[in-house]
Length: 307
Image 1 (cartoon, rainbow, N blue to C red):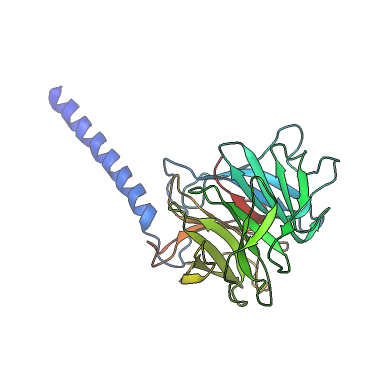
Image 2 (cartoon, rainbow, N blue to C red):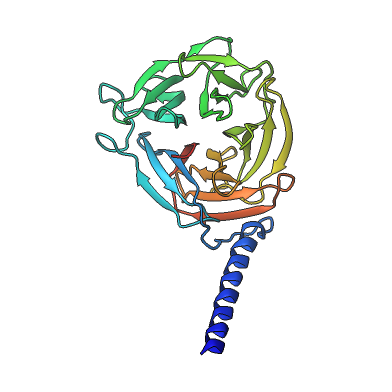
């Protein structure tokens, strides 16, 4: 009997060891360009997701859990008093919202509308209930042509940053918002190169600022100094970020998960084909790691930090 019990225990221990080895290998083994769905990891990334209907322009907030390399993936509405559609205090829909950030200490969301946003373009909005959104025109303090998007809170300092898109100098740049107390747009000292198509902004675990430069189905992670505004090293993302090749500078949401997997997470905005959801890490930043799933999330404009 004792011998049988010992044999059983050994077999159980070997099985556990094998499972642990499988999950460990899955975290770091994918090579550049691979498309894999890894074994379920113990910790799941969570984030808020700003989605926009490509036909009506209606803006929505969802909660997303899991990622292609750390499934299972779930998408659920963020509900308080009604549905998850963003509406102002008069019940008017917020159309074509372009950025979303979240302060976990207060539970308050802040966001932006870009040049085509409605009812107020280039505005700053604020809410805890998506059906009761206060919206205020941004105060331009640095004389550039505004086209705001991809607002993000630096979790190491509490400061809010956003992308100001521009096709001519000096409009293409990272800006610092006066939030939470003011709706000012303050320019960092230096603009980005006009050819740098910043379509996503995030901070890593150490508060380093990165943007995603998009070109067709491909993306490049670019470091930006959050004091000077100057761009630094660039790292090719190790797999496609969208399923639609005909858009030269596609929209994406960019997030860096610090709580679980320590990777970049992207979500695409595809009005024609299914969205692409990825997690990855470029060579030079600890990768290459790349995982992707198509059609798992809504058309994504921006991610906010975890809930």
